[in-house]
Length: 149
Image (cartoon, rainbow, N blue to C red; front, side, top):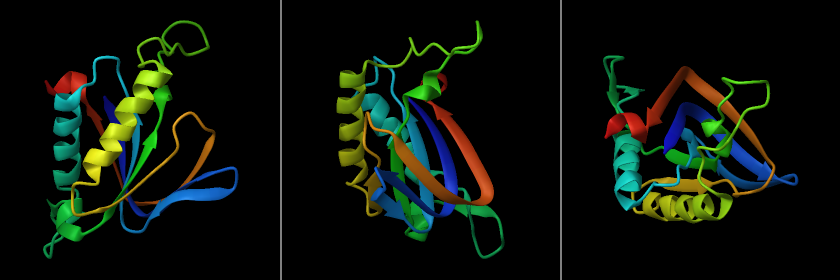
């Protein structure tokens, strides 16, 4: 699993002009799924995500997490995070999980995220989405489960 995490003042995702998820202060997270992503990977990545200390404390040090600040999570499925553009000009998405498998994992990830005391919203798998956000910092972090285990 791969996550591109952006600290935001606000973010939303819409499909066909209809907002499907939106948050105020929090984290907008693009999520890519691998074929072997299982419950262990989901649990580890979520725990890492919600506890990342990327918010300023009273001394302007990055010591607080989204849990500490009461922010939200906007999870957006994005298979292109596993695009490989090393050869040719058209990226290959061979490494990404199949759409059916990835959809199932993503939905389970969203449900697990809702177990945290945070507002959790999500994009819609296998649709053309418009994502809008106001990046805060900017702070952008890449988490990759292949490099964590």
